[in-house]
Length: 288
Image 1 (cartoon, one colour):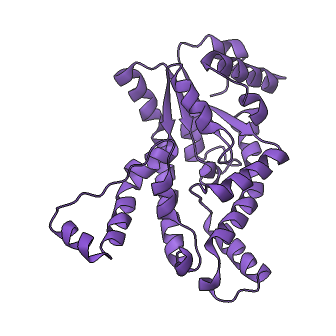
Image 2: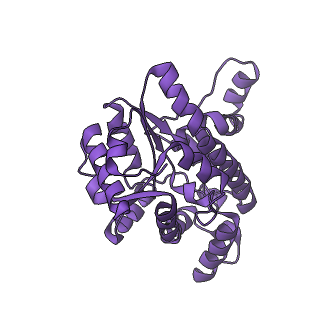
Image 3: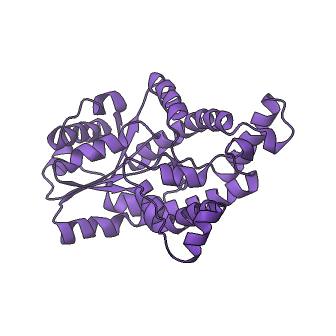
């Protein structure tokens, strides 16, 4: 959804924007703020963790509970109920399920199991992104919202091809929303890496990238046994590698199908009106 000029966006009777960029760059903060200005907030990660992977997550909780005889007996007799309390701001149930490959004694998953869960996430993310047009209509007809923001995960770029004009996910999003890239600096990237170390987010790697980086990490650390890999060490190292690999692809997606704003400019936005002004500036910049 590209606009002829900034006024076309500002004067529209309804607006829908899909924000994308690396995890931690400000997408969810923006979306939460816009809710107070009567924007409907559609969280892709929340949709993944509830509708498309909710059963996987809860079954994993139950599998862990079944290892405790006391809880196992209560589960078998339907005496207790286990569910996920995932929220827009707390994606820990999804992160915990996806896990990190490495030493099981340190909380890691065998690589094959991690790859299986990664494939589940890939499919779920595509479905959640393709749900966007239905939720735009739902937000309007059910709740009366004329303004809509789709808050995507950092892995959006892994399930689309920005060089393919016929990519089905890109077409779904571009036909119903304006795509907006929140672009960070190298300083932002360093801060994101440090923030990830303290609070890991759900991560998705393409199969080829995962195997390549897994092999590289083991080689760099002189590790021959998969079970000797430190899960936390690989997660942080892999996140940094993934961040730098994704940045040019985010830019390509914005160049071909949408707009871009700087994360530092977005951080100054305080309400819906200021966001519209920032979006209008991005549209004008593309026109130039």
